[in-house]
Amino acid sequence: MIKSKYLIYISIIIVIFFLDRFSKIYIINLAENLSNLNISITSYLNIILVWNAGIGFGLLQLEEQVAYNLTTALIILVNLVIIYLLFKSENLHKLVFSLILGGSFGNLFDRVYYSAVPDFIDINYKGYHWFVFNVADIFITVGIFTLIFLEFFKRKNEK
Image 1 (tube, one colour):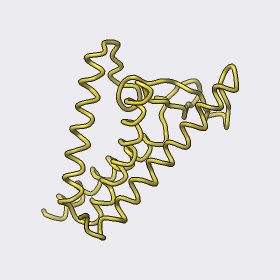
Image 2 (cartoon, helix red, strand yellow):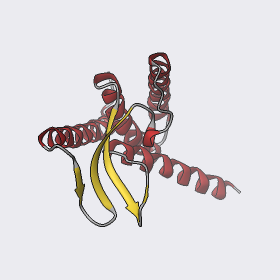
Image 3 (cartoon, one colour):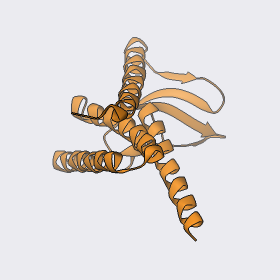
């Protein structure tokens, strides 16, 4: 049985997963109702729908089904490693791994259910566009950068 101290981390994963799912379902439904989903929120933020068959931020988009399946299997393997690290790490790291897993499970669900991940947040500045991303990508990115930050200061304090 899972110890009660892990319930908070499991809850974080579930909340992030459902935040991501609800945002994607909303955008997909909106796109179905509009002929062209291109909503300008500000001069640098747009909502558009892009189906991403690659990994984070549209990288490694592969046409071949075998390559897609191998990429999905690799993502599952990475998730299993992160789950292991979640159980073996300290409290702050547990929180960070929970952020990453919540987002990763959201995108993994889409890869299996839709065979692509719906991305819809488009940030741009003076015509230069960043990768289109989604809510799950935000949590994955924040988690990864926080891990890097924690490791950097851990090593600095060890010296």
